[in-house]
Amino acid sequence: MRILRKEFAGIKVYWIIIVLVLSIFAITMGSKFDRELAHALFQENSKFSNIFAILGKAPAYSLFGFSGVLYFISEKNCPKSWRKILAYVACFLIPIGFGALYGYDDFIGAMDNKILAIFLGILTVALVDVGLFFLFKDVKYDIALKAALFIFFTGVVLFLAFFGLKYAGLRPRFKYIVSMDVDYYKNWWDFDRSLLESFTYEDLSSLPSGHAGFAAASIMFALLSTFNEKTKKFSWIFALVSLVFTLVVGFSRMLDGSHYLSDVGWGMTISYIIVFVFAVCFYSSKENEGESEDAIENEKE
Image 1: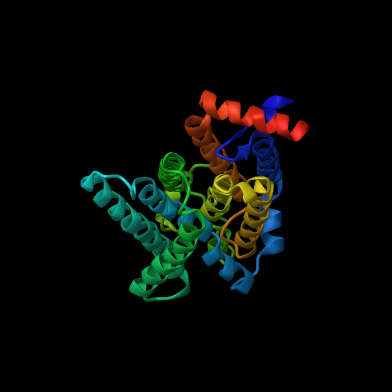
Image 2: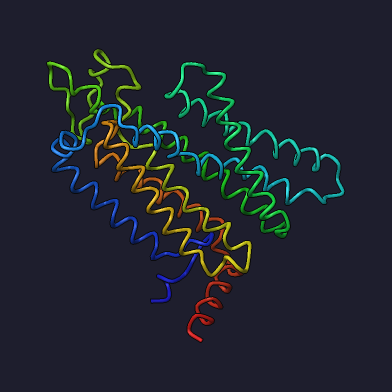
């Protein structure tokens, strides 16, 4: 069917359907077997989990930071001085901002020094974004501008959605309840604010999995693949790598007791829906539809 082969922001409709089926299956299975799987998989201080606790969100934070670089690319040749100044500000401040969030959110778990954690986050995002700049610095200004807006606003909504849902779900992490005398286990649909008497908000941020959600957002790299004619036909590889990476990150978070299977499934589901909704909003013009149909016809030939 033609509709399944359409793409928005380099993301094909059938890719989203496939991954949503997988994530909904994870929610369904987790709803029945979350507790049993958590007991079977739990490994305290797993090195594998510790590594992916840091790496899990790196692609998304780097991508969100790159939105500032893309805006710079779209405005760097603009004759108006105030727009050039704004472009330079965005080019530096947006990657620095997302890098600082990355360091504070993820590196802080591996070290006590907050300043060093923030610095490492900024450095990681900066290095990735510099590499991406040299790969895509010649992209057309209108394409760069649309991509910058799409990636930035998608990232902001993802942050707000996961922050709000985590502090609404109030589900205790398995690793914090495993050694307790009282069984504080809750299903994902059990919302119990009385748990705040026994846990901190951090302890109760199991639902949904932010790491799985942000890893899933790496599917937006498929859009970057369309900037280059040589990589455009391999965009499916970007999507496949994103999915495998997301599954590995999700498994690592289950392994160290930070999340249940249903948490991972919800993280993926929420992320893919938000990304795809914004992709459709930004890339569903008649011009883009025509490009998609041309691509389909070329594939037939």
